[in-house]
Length: 215
Image 1: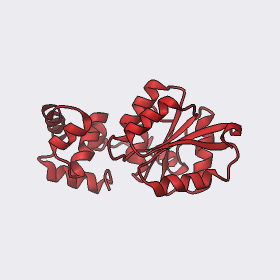
Image 2 (image 1 turned 180 degrees about the horizontal axis):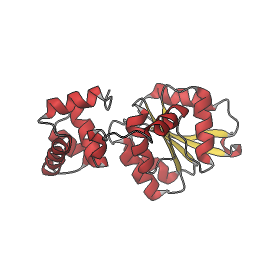
Image 3 (image 1 turned 135 degrees about the horizontal axis):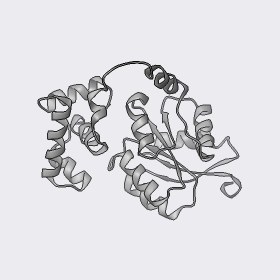
Image 4 (image 1 turned 45 degrees about the horizontal axis):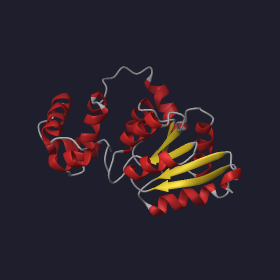
């Protein structure tokens, strides 16, 4: 019963099968209860305002808003909530960006049920969560002298624009989705190409696919 659970959880993912899978895992944990679920960024924000919960499991690739933007809005309105990002994107490409944006942790969708439960419990206690594999990679990189990958120099909005262009969306589509002007998105695109030393969208898309920034 939700009223007796010490950790109240909200799930945000547009895929029913993923939400049902997480709920199936949670069903075996008496200390955790799912109190709400949403399938889009807008629904997540609306529902978050109404619910009393401790942890949100939030997918990055939502149909209407980028998960990192949703994360920032949730944390601005409810800073006490611990958000655990959930994605099939590579951890080394997204986890640090999510943590800097306010996430309490990052889970890859291919993780096991025990890891999901452990991550939820850990972030509910105010601690950060990253996988052992990512922690090892970060530790290994501490002593390596190398130039950052070009996309890591982008701002969150530029990075979001990059992934949307690489997913096949036009400048006008992106402007509409982000509620920004076409001119603003065109400026983001120009800055992205300049920072990453690319010439056009085809090179940008190739780069994003090669580095697993998009599906």
